[in-house]
View 1 (cartoon, helix red, strand yellow):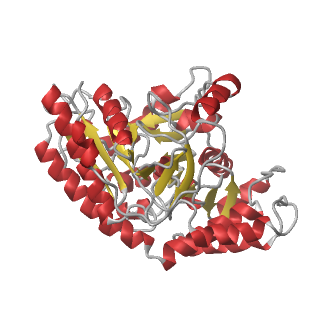
View 2 (spheres, rainbow, N blue to C red):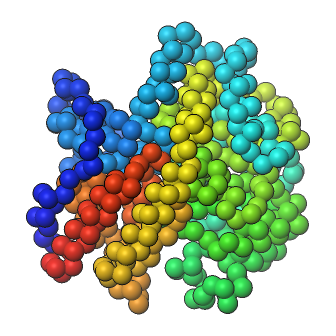
View 3 (cartoon, rainbow, N blue to C red):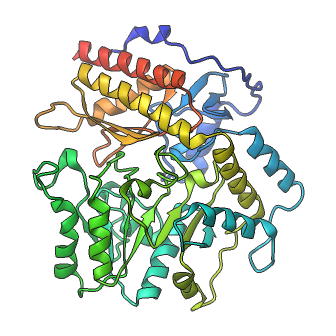
Length: 456
């Protein structure tokens, strides 16, 4: 597959930030150390792994000073921008005052942050439990659901991803993210609202949402008829920005509640205004969960996750002594609060809507131009572009997707990939990006896909 030499004519939008001269170990030295001392389970992207040493808003810099547009946001984690000055200033002040105290002592930041989160939640969801990651937050969510209902069975969604810890891995329904030695027999998986690859071969809306109604059969055939909960990503992240029909979640929530379960929205990737139209991605589907799980964008880059639920459900965490040493860490709480403040003060959600709509429209135009693009989906700045070798058979273009990532990096654009076959481009940048940044992405993809077509 040949490379397109027109990449040299592409230029990133102007940025006034000048990175500091890097004087640390070389990329080769870091790579050698990592290979010798870090678990091989800690994977890297690209044939030649890149090294990032500095970040500024929507951009990152490698050790040579080369600038890249970060269209993956550190795996959908940087929400308001790398090293946002307002966030960084408040964190620096806290680090110089107090770095750690466990939750067995009082500290104002955890209570203040919990209050701010409650203001963003549906009415009645006002009790938060903080963790270090989305995986941990999902562990707490499932534990709470089982304790509250007295039921064991959990319903999750095929093609979904919920983390890498024990229960979270069982919730995940991607074979390539699961270890065969670590499975929870009480987790069952229903069909996703994946219209592009409908498992029933139907089309919306004449399908009458068979994928959603599938949960009733699943409960009746594979559980005692009572469940602890349903958990689902309102828009699937690792699965490739799979966006269900509008009625999908309301049907599921109703059926699950009829069978004794509560409903959990996994907002680890879709929350904090990323879909543009609402603060939480579940709000796009007109449902009210009993519990919201979050991480990634909640802290704009620090290890921070959380679960927010009702006062009644939250009581079950007193059934035994339970605590998280770093959950509620003062530095993490301050960064979380500062991030929320920036989202509101700078209109980050509205920017995600405006720039996201512009970007999606331009991606749809690329779909008309390049046969390799089978589907464009998502909302706001949570977008997916599924690549296929043939639009009729929808054969996944897995190797081609990997090549797109390689060539995009050469042009100064960092993308992600997802889907069961790794054939979906994940475009989920920091929500501070501009239309000029979006246009640069389109120019890159147009150049790459055009070159791939001419060389095929």
